[in-house]
Image 1 (tube, rainbow, N blue to C red):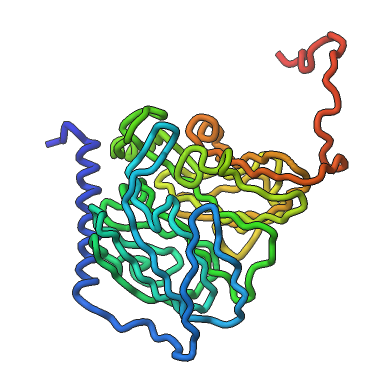
Image 2 (image 1 turned 90 degrees about the vertical axis):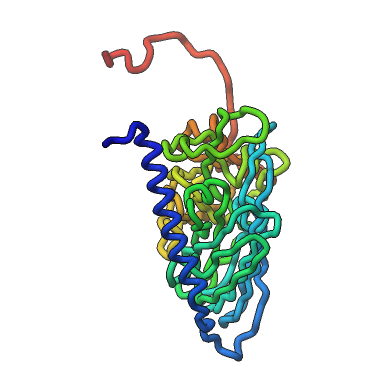
Length: 363
C-alpha cells in the first residue's frame, strides 16, 4: 500500500536511519573505553587557542610536533539571524560557525568535547581531519552536562570542516553545528598580512525570509533544499558595516573559506579581486589566477590575494540571487593610498552622439 504522504515517509525513514547510525556510534562508545592514542611522552603539551569568526589563531611557528589539548563546548542559544529575526542556534563554542581550530601536521590532539548543562539535545563531533571511525563521532556522544574525550593524530595537512553527526544529522548541521580545523603542513604556510575565517551556510525557517521574531527550523524546506537564508558567518550582515573585514592596500590576504551547507554549494567570489592562489577543496595543491571557486557543502578552500588599491570589496556567493536576496554577502574594506596605474576610478561621464545601436544586425 502506497503512503499518501511520500515526503513524510521519506523523512521518517531518514530519521529512523539516522537514529540507528547514532545508536551504533553511541553503543560502541559506551561498550568500550579504548586506550588513548600513544603519544611521545617527550612532546610538549599545549592548550589550543580557539577563535570565533572571522578571527583566526596565530600561525604556528614551532618546527616540531606537540600534544595539543582542544577544549570545545557545545551551546544552544538564541541569536540574530537577520534584522528583527532570531533563531535557536546549536553551536560549537557559542558562535556560528564554530571556533576555528589550528594544529600542525604530526600533532597529537587530545580533544575534549563538552555539552553545556542548558542544552536540550545530545551532540557529538565529526572532524574531517580525523582518520578514524566517524571522524570522532562514535567517541563523542555527549549528553547535556557531560564531557567526552578522544585523541587523534593529525596525519594529513589541509583545511577541514567539522560538524555534529548526531541524529538527525541534517537538522544538527542546519542549526549551525559546523566549523573549520586547519592542519598546517610541517613546513608551515607562507606568511601573509591578514587571515580571515569565512564560512557559508544555508538556513531553513518556518517563516519566509525576513519574517520577524524567533523562527523555528523547517524540516520540509530543508528536505526540499529551499533555503530562506544563505549567509556568511551565521547571519545576514555578519561581515558588513561595523563587522566588515578590514585591510590596507598592499596587504596579502588569506581567507579560510568553508561551507557548512547543509545543502548549497558555494560559488565564492570577491568582487574586484582575483585570487592569486586557490588551494581548492582545502588540499595541498593550488590553482592560480582564479575568479570564482566552488566550495562544496562539507568542504573548504584557502584563497590568497593581494589587495592593490583601496575600496570596498564585496564577498559573494556568485549564485547571485543568494547574495542580494538571501544574505550571502560580506565586505572587505581596504584603506590606503590610491594607485591610478592599477585602477583609475571613473574618468568621465559625458553624452555621446546618437547612432545605430551596437548589435543591430543581430535579429
